[in-house]
Length: 208
Length: 208
DNA sequence: GCTAACTTGTGAATCAATTCACAAGCTCCC
DNA sequence: GGGAGCTTGTGAATTGATTCACAAGTTAGC
Image (cartoon, chains in turn cyan, blue, purple, red):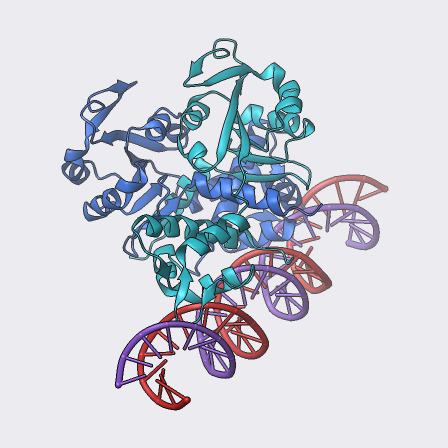
């Protein structure tokens, strides 16, 4: 299959979000135009994005919302549960571990790791903080699909290297660090500093 | 000035991060090639990115690290302090309020808001949770530059509308919601669901 | 002062993403 | 069954981003 751009995948995700909302409101069909309006794009873009994967609509009518939801979930790989571990039980790691959105969307948080002995053993709901020492052993056993990296900058590359060596193929990185990983490992980064600086740039250079 | 792509601004931000680190290690000059290697891009890209704003290097030698840091901070609008408010004192809002990275990088968190009476009045360090009721009044008085939106999906659009009406021109949105705002307001979104689904897609479609 | 070794800055070329524009298909109504 | 009114799916055109490739500076050594 042709390589799909990252921006396309992000939009599919946005469409899915809006479709699910529409379904809750009881709607059953939708046009590319309506989908575009709410996704902040154009109808041609919506149709092109979907056309990479097949043809899901009916000319003259639009898309069946339940069918399109199902197709998008299939495309995005959301028809299965993904096992997630969180590395780092600091402010961000803790907030993420308690964040309901993960489980809701089929991402099961199996464990949280930290190397600070004071944090190891503490617990919220049914998730216990495990000792980072046992990361390799646990990964071999639990086979998590995705690791969320929420450690400080100084510890990020080493933690990533350990995760990769232990067999993790996908990392969601919250550290403000450009990670070096092999080509078969996929990394997505959420970098607060970068987002804030993007806003700073925009505010500084707006036309007046 | 020519419009600069978002991706370019993100890279400038990444260069700045790496330059600061290099400066801490006592280095004084760097080549576009080295900068590219650590930023995950190419030397031509680095030079092109910088060329939009001027010419900062010396042929044959590379870039002076302190000078380039200064220039990038100037370009990104980081030579001043930005006033930030956080809206929503849930898990994410709270974690953000306590996150040291803001202040470190010149983003001063003035206040946190929530509409839950149980949360209003609580305090960490020197930040108190204020009642969301007083948002408009406070904004008129404090003139924050950036609002971080950390409320649930259902409350996001309404909160954004209030912020915009009160005069906020930049929003960092953590809600899984596509916000509708006027053209003169800049929004950056951090959407966990989207990132996770991006990883899910990549894992599902890797070549084997 | 001259040569060798580097490295920048930038037009030109390539590659990628988005938008245009329209034929083709579907539904409804008469 | 036929026409009007929509809306998709998709090549072609356009716009935008990245990479190439090289002239023009700079430094260091002799």
